[in-house]
Length: 264
DNA sequence: CTTCTGACA
DNA sequence: TGTCAGAA
Image (cartoon, rainbow, N blue to C red; front, side, top):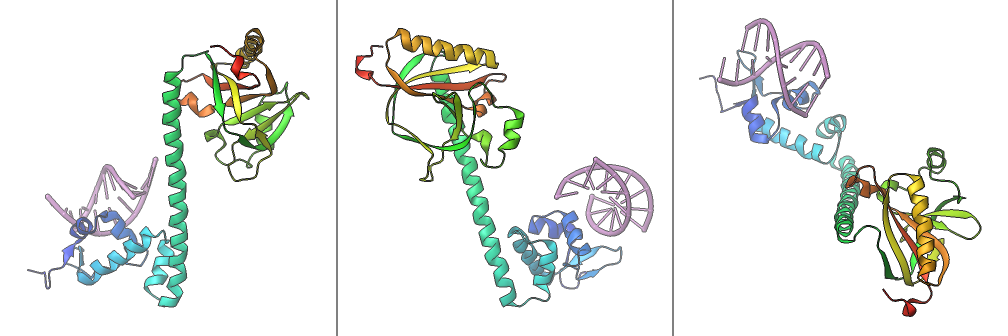
């Protein structure tokens, strides 16, 4: 009987616009959406005008604008003043899309690598073919050292999403080890040549086991009569521990000069 | 039964 | 942002 033109209650408005009643009251508190009037029992009532207004607020909010800015948009600002805000919103959502794409790629990579773990029996030696592998230097340290907290702190920030990446340890002859990541952006610090490589994948729980496996790798190479030259490459894939708690995943590679003489 | 306000995590 | 209590 008190409905003059078919106004609706806050919960009806909420359902209509797919938001919570709490949110509608919040907008009111922030001074961007007043009810058409408030009725006898203090109920807020809303009409078409408020519905359109709320629709606008929701659009602006989707663009990532703060309630503060929305307030200005809907009151003071001219079309010319609002336009740059939309350009900014466009740039922001493009950035967000890129972020989500990266996220997607990493998840896909995880699943591919997981499948490879299941495929290859632990501890097998294989021969693999590569295209040239460009690597970007992260930092260098002594071969006897390991990647510890201090090293991480010293060289933090240079590599975004470090723990989603394959960390390449390149042990050269001079007793130093270079820490590299795969950076495809054209510029690289080290180019591992295309060709055949002896490969050994392994899982360890601590550094002693890792060192043991490295010795074993050398021994195996020598015993089989492989002619290996160049640095030893060790690839750490820390994210694979997601599948096997307490186990660290590494791959050892060494360039193979005489692949034709090799018998499996 | 619905909404309001205020408080809290 | 969701939830909850107490009141209207």
